[in-house]
Image (tube, rainbow, N blue to C red; front, side):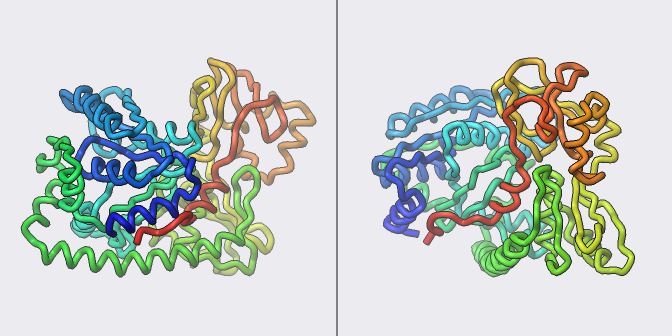
Length: 421
């Protein structure tokens, strides 16, 4: 993609000249190049540069402060976001990833910004493919990074599409953009720490251009295959009916592929990732057998009801644990990956409704009975101590909430705007 192609892509992706554009900006060379190009061709569109202080390294506060000052000087509306975390004993990189995307996701949703630009490069793509090859990933894993992906980190990026317009650019090309603009960038010291698998990948590929080229070619082929599979799955899922509690009904004449079923299970369960494909394949084979009744997989119960196959959130262990989640007042929070709830006062908590059903009036119990036996167990209530104060599915009280299953399922493969050239 040339600069002219980037400019055309930006205009097509944000056709409204008043659209807000958000850019993830660390101060590194890749994100600096993306910010420079975005500001150069954004026209009247306001550009937000979002910088996250992970508070994991000495001097991070100073570095992020410098990044926000640089972004502001370039013409962006700079925001510094702080990840407030406790001690992290393991999985630091994954925790940091979820933390920063959670902060940036909140920022974008609060300002009704539906996409976030990130500066992944061709080198990042090759490194990702190298790592997945080392870990024995299947063909879908070898498709690598997509130019756009809806809510890839769940629920932190719900409603947000990640856009990667420079995925075809080399890291050195992006550095040239910075040099030509007379700007310097920050080098993350963790980029030379060989304890991290990505740094090992970077080191291995730096001296083997043939390997990098081979991996990228394989990725292109697998990505085309995956995108075609995703399009077919989306068509299949359009015939699945969802109830207002997030349970699904699959008509007799609808036959879901492995990917469609895996995605449906993920969305109904609220899980961040899809179930293992081999187990999904075995499930599909089981459902076609005469006399199939039910089984569980991926946090769901998959059961036969007449001519239809139904899927509900599996709540056996969940109900026994009676999980409760404290709610922050006036702040949207996600319960069980399936419901977004905004409490209107302090001291409230979300928990399963079913164990508190004795608190329901006769009319509320009648409303609860409109759901089938499994679906009624997946509903939530909002409690003040032990007292049930809100239960929207049975019309108790008035609280701001929304189900996430439908939005997640049907926007999973949405491609809005223009594709990168």
